[in-house]
Every structure is written in C-alpha cells, then in structure tokens.
Picture 1 (cartoon, rainbow, N blue to C red):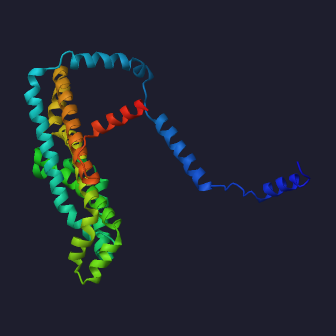
Picture 2: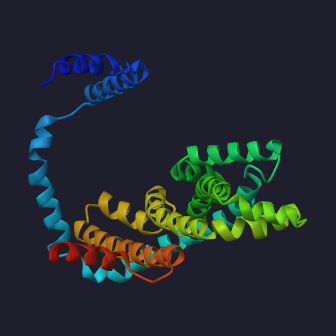
Picture 3: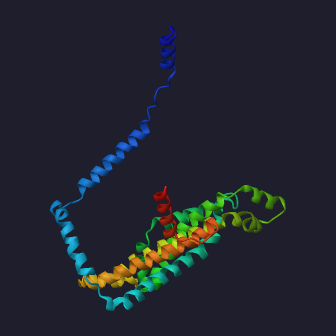
Length: 291
C-alpha cells in the first residue's frame, strides 16, 4: 500500500455526504404505527373465538357444500343474472353520463371555472359508497333492482370521470397541437386530438369498472335491492346453509367467468390480440418450469 493511501481514504470519508434526516417521513411512519396499534387495541377481540374459528369454519363449510342444494341452482343463477344486469345497467348509465363530463374536466380543453366544479363533483361521488347512495334513494325509488342500478351508476360516474380526465390529460400533445393548428374547434380537438390516443385506456377502464360493479351489485342486494345478495341474506338469516352453498358456487363461477371475458377483451384493446388471463398465467408458469 502506498503512503498516499491513508490520505485518500480520509479524503473519501470527508467527501461522503451525510445521510439526510427525513424528519417528516419518520413522523408519518410513527403516526401510522401508533394509529394501527390504537385501532388494534380499541377492537374488542375474543381470543377464544379466534382459537375455535378453524373448527367452526370447517363445520359450516360442511353444512354448505356437503352437499349444496343443487335443486336451487336455477333460482341462484337467475338471481345472479339479475345482479349482473343491475351492474351492467348502472355501468352503462355511468359511462354515458361521465364520458362527456370527463372531457369537460380535462386540463387544457376547458377553462378552470368549468373544470374545477366537475372534478369536485367526481370527488364527492367517489367519496360516498354505493350502499350509502342506495339507502338514500330508497325513499324515492323503493326496494327494487333499479335502485341498485342507479346507485352503481352514481358511483361509476365518480370513478370513471376521474379515470377519464386523467387519461385524456396523459395523451401526447402533438395531435392536439396539430388539430388546433389546422383550425379545429374545441369539439374537433376532443374528437380527433384526444380521443384516438386515450381510447384504449378508457375502454379498458370501462370494462374494469363493470367488474367492480358486479361485486357491488351483490353487496347492494344485502339491503334489499334484489339479486343474489337478497337471496343470500335471506337464507343466512334462516340458516339454510345448503342453499347458501349453491349461491356461493354460482357467484364465484359467474364472477370468475366475467373476469376472464373482460380480461380477454381488455387484452385485445390494449395489446391487439385475444387471450384469456388464465391461459396467459398458466403459460407463464409453464415457461418458467421449462427453464
């Protein structure tokens, strides 16, 4: 080792920057930890019930699925299709209403006094769950599937509106500038400068929102909006567990089927070819195993 080595090491240690003290980040982590611990201790937890939960779970699973009430399959499938129809109608209404509003809420296309109120409306609709919206609408529309569809529509408007204007704002500005340079009006800029570039993402968001609405429709049925949720809560209250079992089977199969079909369509929109998500996942696993 040369005589200059200690000096070089000392100079390197002196030049090394000090690790920054991120007080704000540490404070946030400490506050979050305190909140989690406080929430944990504020809940009345029965530890003895937790110890016996696996045994009770096996018992009720046996009541539901050994065997399920196959005779109720037509009723279960019909109720599930009502929930899917509720989700489809609500999502379509949300798309029709939110699409033009999301264009008007896009930065660079409309002035701020038009844009900001619409963004505030989307934020309010996203903040209120569909169940709360349905409860508020019960006095007007009654306990019907249409109430659930309207609740899903309002919830979809808030989510799709935000996804829409964020997609429109993220497009390449070259087409927008070219349309404006050609003398296009504001509507023509939206049609030819914004929509062609944002279309794949927006269509994928619409499909994804429909998947969310299918799950929301089952929850809305628990408050009497119809569909699979109402049939499920009625049989749970009367402890008809074999009917609950067939309901769970139908819900899982229908929901997974919708997810696969929706994923296949989204893959076609984004990547340009048809492929089921399940097949894609299996093929990736097979390729990894072969390697």
